[in-house]
Image (cartoon, rainbow, N blue to C red):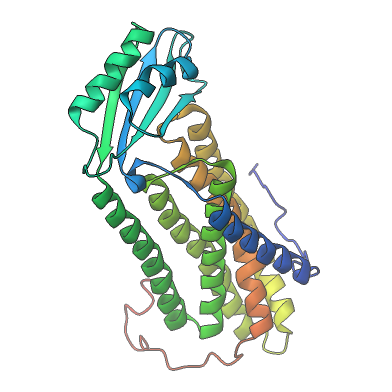
Length: 322
């Protein structure tokens, strides 16, 4: 007996409320951009420059006492955040102390780090410092530029790939879905103020690849059905194609989410931001493949004659990669 998350054959109309779903996606993107501009992101040390000191102690973290102890050092605005994790022991209390790079210095000096540690030791003698990470402001600026370029190049590569494999209408739909996923991920990070660092950039690039894979599966079936049902309206062809690939889509996304949720709950605070971004990306990526990419293809339309000469015709290995 095989497990089925969806029936073998479905005939759902995914475009019955296409204007509502597309309008909701557009509104969510506008809201995400507005939040990014108004609220901003909680940039990590990777992008802001400075030093992060991770503390662990047997006693509960007193953020106020920590801040009061560090204040006489005159280091400017210091962020102290207590970290909660279900995997921690009862006597394991963790905090992150973030110190921005001082003006005129490439990074927080070793003497300053030692002074901070001594001040915190005076508050709690059991405190230890498992890790200290420093990034200079010049390096952090370069990382921001590199991260933006990496995401843009990934989306541009997708645009060219889909255009060559299918047609320009498919390409615009796929890229719109990718932009939708990236913008909404940035929006949720802005709302929740989860730390945004290089690990999240890696997650965004992974989301681009995952969402593209899901979109290409649907588009491949659309192209097959456009040839098979030449007189069927494109809306019916899209609905048929999505329904035919729905079981695969739900199974792939469902099993991926099972692993991600396990990591989100049990993986610890170090990778939590990355795993959260991946979890959110899988959800919105699955949604956008159907309600954004296919929706745009529905309104742009596409050709019905796919009888171009096959470049691999006559080659015995022509179908090896399909």
